[in-house]
Amino acid sequence: MSVKVYKYSVNRIRKVILSFAVMVFFSLNSMASLGGGSLKSNILSDATGTLNLGLEFPFSHTRKWSTDLSGSLNAWKFSQEAFWKNAYVQPELRYWLCDYSSGHFFGLHLHGGIFNIGKINDYRFQGWFVGAGLGYGYAFVLDEHWNIELEAGVGYAYAPHDKYECETCGDTIYKAQPYDYWGMTKLAVSLVYFF
Image (cartoon, rainbow, N blue to C red; front, side, top):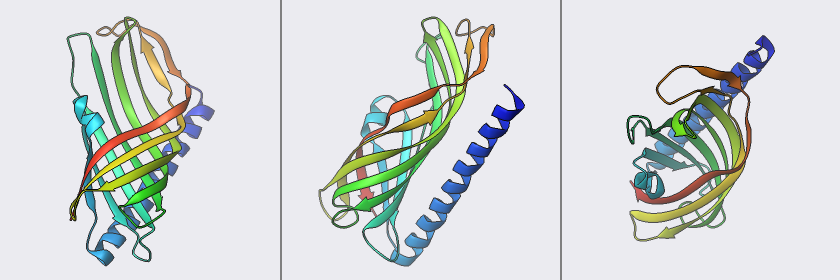
């Protein structure tokens, strides 16, 4: 990887981390002001064995805007050669058409993470990704403390990665191959608890 590409990648990661920090700050500010928020788990991720958790808080000055911070971790092996290891975070700024936690909403999300995937056509891929996307969702109110939330999002991810000859050995085919992905960046059916 050239120095120019490396510096560009590092700058992107710094911008993503700064964005995360700003969103977390506003989330904590909102939580302190309103005394409430929600904890959620994506049932689709749960079905794949991926540990995931999300927190969402409304902004203190309005109930139309909220911040959501979700993350996941999958460190499991399916067999000795097959695995799909990844970890990512995905903060999102949401605008609710009605009120926070009910009805339609639109979101602007960032995402970043790492991956190590084996047994794809006898190759292993390892790398990281950052990107952004737009989402649309709907929250179904079940009662005072529970919701079901549906969301789909599309966007972009920059994912440089290394490709290895097989799952267990380290024979490198290429390193730091840039990859630009355009497509679905979020799909969630979440069970939400309000506190």
